[in-house]
Length: 126
Image (cartoon, rainbow, N blue to C red; front, side, top):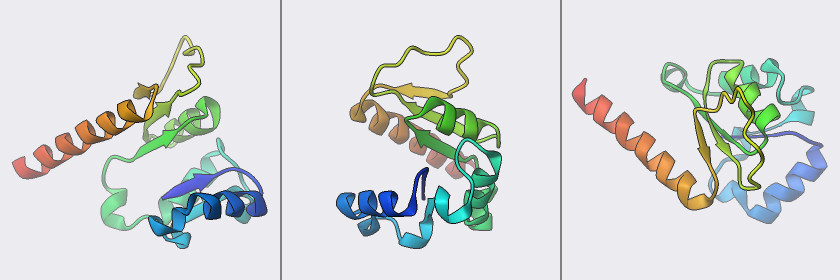
C-alpha cells in the first residue's frame, strides 16, 4: 500500500508518471486530501490500517518513508516498525526512533530481503 501527503491532483500526477498502478491497485493508495488528514497524524495511519486484511493486521507492520517527522514519527505513533529512507543523508536525530535507516536503494532492498527471510524462517518454525 502507498500513503501520500498532498493534494489529490498533485499525487495523482505522480502516481501516473511513476506508473504505480501497475504494481499497486488504486484502492490501495491513500492520499491525505482524500481522507482529510495528513501524516504524521495517527488518524491517517489508522485509515491505512483499516484497509488491510485481518490476517495482515495481526502481523508486524513496517512503514518505509523518506520524511523523518511525517513517516517515521507518524508510523511509530501507531506502533509500526519503520525504515527511514535517508537518501539525502540528513543528520540523524539524537533520539532516533527508526528501526532501520538506509541510504540508498541497494540498502533498502537488502534490508527488506533480510526482513522477509526472517519472516519466512519464523513462519516455517511455527
